Image (cartoon, rainbow, N blue to C red; front, side, top):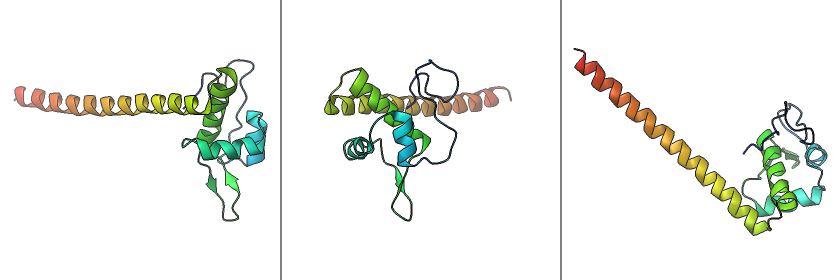
Length: 124
């Protein structure tokens, strides 16, 4: 889930820059998001969207998507004033919309393929 301006490139002046890395340590995530490590660990227990993988030594390895999710969660909680449960509902609603879009795109691709097959039959 990408927030406007949080693409690591051009965006609003106050949007945090996300360095281009494969994985981020918790200290990197804390630095980018501007929240304490214990807050991130708590959010991991509350939000299904935030599941960093763990290294063999048990250290958290956040992906770019995790960082973007952290920034979205922070925005919902701190800037938009949502409660934890309200932020969860908002994220799930957005996920549902994205899933619906994916299903619609797949249906359109299938329909397009069928129409091309009909067109090929008619051209014979």
